[in-house]
Amino acid sequence: MKEATRISVTISPEGSLEVLSQQEVNRLRDTSSNGMHDVLRRCALAILNYGTMVDDSCSVLEAYHDFDIEVIQQDRGIRLKLTNAPAHAFVDGSMIRGIRELLSSVLRDVVYVSNEIEKHGRFDLESAEGITNAVFHILRNAGVMKPSRDPNLVVCWGGHSISREEYDYSKSVGYHLGLRDMDICTGCGPGAMKGPMKGANVAHAKQRRRNSRYLGISEPGIIAAESPNPIVNELVIMPDIEKRLEAFIRVGHGIIIFPGGVGTAEEILYLLGVLLHPDNADIPFPIIFTGPAGSADYFRRIDEFIAFTLGAEAQKYYRIMIDDPVGVARAMRDGIEEVTAFRREHQDAFYFNWRLEIPRDFQQPFTPNHESMAGLALHRRQNVHDLAANLRRAFSGIVAGNVKEQGVRAIEKQGPFRLNAESELMAPLDELLTSFVAQGRMKLPGSEYVPCYTLNT
Image 1 (cartoon, rainbow, N blue to C red):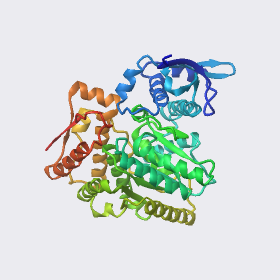
Image 2 (cartoon, one colour):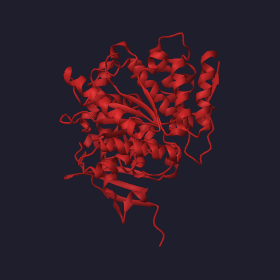
Image 3 (cartoon, helix red, strand yellow):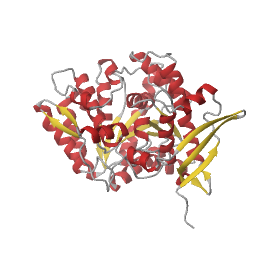
Image 4 (cartoon, rainbow, N blue to C red):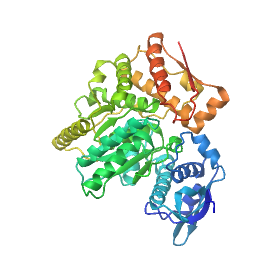
């Protein structure tokens, strides 16, 4: 008997949010631009569609165009009515427990962000301080803060489209981190986001370690293209990419960067741009670029691009370690011990890095469209922080054009984004992006990549 590909069912939330007001329920049902139904449906579908090798949010939404989710208010709490949900989220008609937990996390974050961040007016989202406070409150509401734990959360960045060799390497690094009592935080998707979590999960089992953390941080625009991998046991949906990036560096105690594409380049530029701020000069924050021997050329190109655009000062913030999982884990452990000592000395919180100064240009949401992309100042006649911020926006726009529904639709309608760069910057930028395409880092294997951008001088 052939198994169904869709299932319709009504379930109860699992732990994160079980009671809603009638007003909140009405807004979750509201399909207008002012309602929350669209973002809830998009994120819920991503959770239910976990584990699939698809990196195009449009294709996911089109494949399940008849999927819907409805919040039903009852006297004893709320229920979620799912219509035509992906069948692989269920076993013998019952939803997999981890998926139900993550689905509840989505509901929790969508409601909180709408009520407390966007509608309430509690936070001044035009100021750096107000945005940081909003990030803190979203994370606190999600239960991310663990005041009783010493620093041990390693953020792992890298591409969703990587080779098997690179995936196995990221898993090995995660394994050796796990043996050393490290928890893992990633963007929650496949590839270099899944590998470290899977490796750490095995190591934690060997060490008989309980309450291990595999924290995934995503945002509505990208989650459909990077559905949470099965190891994620904590999930937070931030309102936009900028708050997602800030969340990573506020809660993480060190960052390991594996091979990736434009999304990883965006993260690198964001991180280095923040750390180059003079107020952050003395804050320890271990950063390691690493991959197998076959990835050496990838990191060489990244390193050269950083040197050309941000200068030698930026290169001092990271180490490049090739084909050495044990060495990477030891170096990260030593770096986090330095972070621990620094925060104890300055009586800083272990669970949230308040001391980091994040310039407002790195916090304000950037909406990539043809006009905003063409208007980016891609030249070196500006402050290095400003150049880092604008390069970060350029790569963010390419990510949107590659995988996010709004960006993909804009490209289909108006053609590729146009980036205008000075001639001296054009060559290294073109070389870097071309290398990503040649190495298959723009799309998952089997997907032909058609560039969503053109470069002009």
